[in-house]
Amino acid sequence: MTEPNSDSVTVRYWAAARAATGVDEERREPGLVADVLAAAEADHPDLRPVLQVASTLLDGVAVEREASAAAGSTLEVLPPFAGG
Image (cartoon, rainbow, N blue to C red):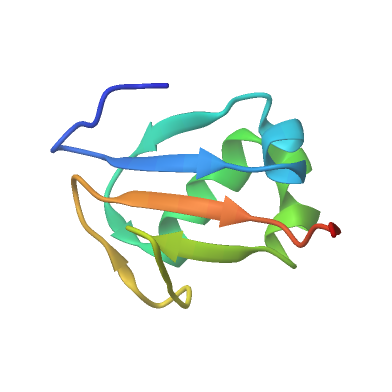
């Protein structure tokens, strides 16, 4: 895992999102959640179908794509997954 950075957003990928990106987490420029995810998708095209169904958490709270991801925050991409 990367160390937190006050100049960027840490994006953590879970399950299918991790498989699509090939990384557990990475740093991105702050901005709207939609813009942070669009930048991730541009670098990881296989992430597109995952993002269409994934939920996002910002610092542990579920957020919509219009939310602002400030520097120093953590954005998590959680695809739907089965379990029991």
